[in-house]
Image (spheres, rainbow, N blue to C red):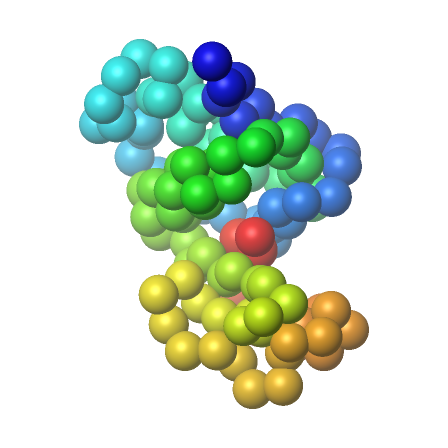
Length: 116
């Protein structure tokens, strides 16, 4: 049985800027999923600049990050080498398919954000 993704502070993977408090994760189905959501929310609200997650279930973890971002009312930005950087569910930011370009674009974003 595959393990659930467990957020760990201090290693690169999903990064964040300052976030605000929001609703709890109690609306999630299942106690374990709610606990993971609460743990990730706590790490983000604790202003950990980088959070690493080891998981072979990338889509499942992305869903968790999307729920946390929605509950915290913080925009989620997703980067991949094939599509570039985009706001979750939005259009790709121009010229952001290379890591250096994506980081430059992130530097121009004002306000809070979670970057996956």
